[in-house]
Amino acid sequence: MPNRLSGKRVFITGAAQGIGLAITEVFIAEGAHVFLIDRDEALLEATAAKLKEGGAVVGYQAADIADAVAIGEAVGKAAAEIGSINALVNNAGVNVFAEPLQLADEDWDRCFDINLKGAWNCCRSVLPDMIARDGGVILNIASTHAFTIIPHTFPYPLAKHALLGMTKSLGIEYAAKNVRVNALAPGYVETQKVIDYWSSFSDPEKAKIETLKLHPGRRIATPREIALAAVFMISDECPFMNATCLTIDGGLSVLQHQ
Ligand SMILES: NC(=O)c1ccc[n+]([C@@H]2O[C@H](COP(=O)([O-])OP(=O)(O)OC[C@H]3O[C@@H](n4cnc5c(N)ncnc54)[C@H](O)[C@@H]3O)[C@@H](O)[C@H]2O)c1
Image 1 (tube, rainbow, N blue to C red):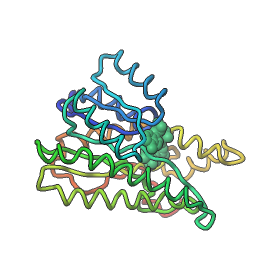
Image 2 (cartoon, protein in one colour; image 1 turned 60 degrees about the vertical axis):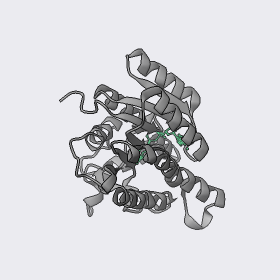
Image 3 (cartoon, helix red, strand yellow; image 1 turned 90 degrees about the horizontal axis):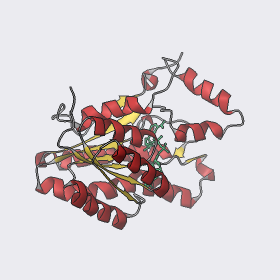
């Protein structure tokens, strides 16, 4: 079933690498036109150039999603370059992990400014046009941290819980305007962020093996496996899926213990 995203003009954040890049590549293969945001300007430019070489319709803007003005301007640029945005993937996010009482105030702010307010900045920039036109679809990349807790990862799970709350709230607010808002909750996915997490341990290889062992299938997800689920959720194949969350974690979050 090719071209499942034909007619979708998608604003994707954190698109220069990892899950965001996998989503971008799979969406292009399914016929979407994409506008990419990342705060890593050099990586974003290189990524966009490579995608354009392959013939994709791609616009991009280096921006920090925590900067509401920059995101508003980027949505304007996206409309001018690829047409009014009718789909948004809020993917950009950062790990902020601490023992709660050791957390610095600036790290609390950084966590919520990016993982929650950043997604809101994008939602509020695209929603007026979606509501005024034919509706649209928003996908928030949450995490299993949106409903489970790993000790010493505070306050990242709080922001992901809130992102799930925002998904439900906006999904209800705009359902009658033909806007669907859903979340996708990956478990561990092999991206730079997870490699950096393993590297934070004195024995990274041991940390990796411990992570794989947690999983019923003894492996973690590839970014592409998350992207394939995102295609379904952004496509018109699930028109009544709204204000909900799809978990893709190989069964990790329902496993009591092994
Ligand atoms: N990797 C995992 O195991 C995993 C699991 C569950 C959820 N997630 C979520 O998936 C999303 C993507 O994760 P990933 O592992 O691909 O990350 P990643 O670090 O590999 O890539 C994230 C990209 O987002 C960009 N970015 C970060 N902060 C930004 C900001 N403020 N403004 C603009 N761009 C910004 C980075 O430059 C980077 O290119 C995140 O929201 C993350 O919380 C990841």
